[in-house]
Length: 305
Ligand SMILES: NC(=O)c1ccc[n+]([C@@H]2O[C@H](COP(=O)([O-])OP(=O)(O)OC[C@H]3O[C@@H](n4cnc5c(N)ncnc54)[C@H](OP(=O)(O)O)[C@@H]3O)[C@@H](O)[C@H]2O)c1
Image (cartoon, rainbow, N blue to C red; front, side, top):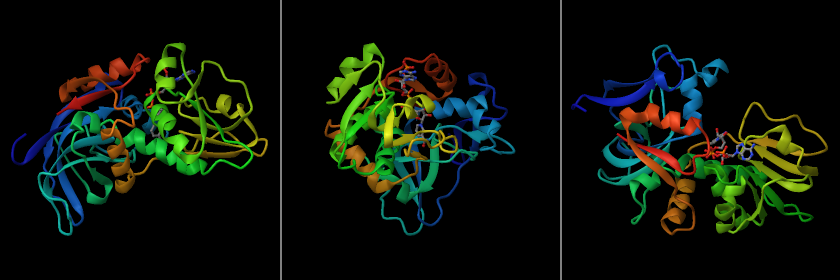
């Protein structure tokens, strides 16, 4: 990083991990309400693999002339503030950059974001762990917002992909909202699921009051919901068709500083999982993508720019 440029990992022509390049781009000044953060850690999420592969370009969700930025969440230190920002330079923050169609991302040494989109990282939570929280913690919390409160006649919630990042947060957070939670996961994940206070199953029969579909099983998960129950998926725009009076929705995660602040506080208190698989350098982003693509990874790969 020079004074006027910084390094970031991007894709120009998407084609999988091999298409990830680390390039130098100009430093951007924060505008009103914005901050510039020196990124200490950025997690590698399934969505990033889809961007690098061109999956979202193919869906028409990305239309960048030069390059597409990689990475949705980060933790780091505020290094500059625009007008109207209360956060002091030197404050440790974590945040989410949502949305596909952008030429910048969190796989970078620096990022400029709205101050409203970040939360202060509490004492006792290191930045590597903090970087694993925003995307998947907020997604789980917003899935629960979409589900609403359980109906009076039934509170049995099934979480598919329960040992994944979104799934793990769902298991931890759903009981606060009055759900009796069961995690559907692979046999090896039973200890993790039960450790978060949920029931475990390796195979689900139909009849659940609600299903939170963190494994993106779509129609197969909808079939597990009872008549008149609720389904929330993770593929907005590709929700399964409504059937049998079931309420069908899909989350599209958005930044929410206050909601993230609560998630970080609960992570610092040990109430939410903070799972780090490995820490790699920015120029090893392609290696991290290859490792995640193999499946079975529990905990995030985190890039340290
Ligand atoms: N719409 C949004 O705003 C939004 C936001 C965040 C995430 N997402 C999506 O949400 C999904 C979950 O994300 P994540 O980060 O939690 O992924 P993850 O950590 O990879 O977790 C997915 C979990 O589902 C399990 N799984 C997949 N297929 C399964 C099957 N047939 N049976 C049993 N378990 C199965 C995986 O197990 P194995 O590893 O053993 O396969 C893994 O434990 C992803 O599709 C992601 O793209 C959407």
